[in-house]
Length: 131
Image (cartoon, rainbow, N blue to C red; front, top):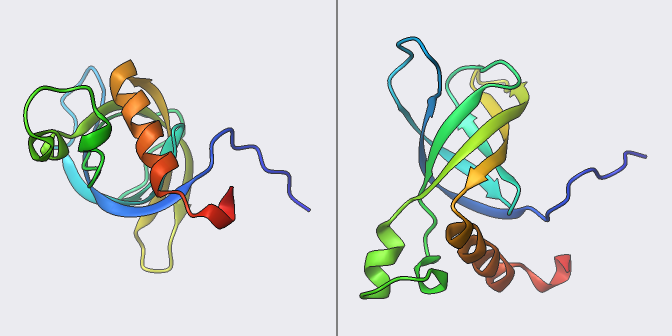
């Protein structure tokens, strides 16, 4: 029996994100993809290519519905369109039958107010059966 090592509960949520490898040389152009689930600790990303473990990625996540949990001025709709920007590290790479990849990405740095808003949002949408 495998032992669960995750610190945070993953919530199924499909949405889009942009990501780009952080490097000192000219890298690939930013990619647009989707993620399948998210937690306060990271997310599962669809990727057209593999990235080596430990690769740092700049992430811009679209999180539909998280606007009301953010500290902001102005209408909630405006906050909803603002992406969550984070630095993440590739901690798992799995090739799919289609030839694409799934990347397990662990958050390394997230603005504290954004992380707090994400946690509140995830707690609000979490299925009660997984508590």
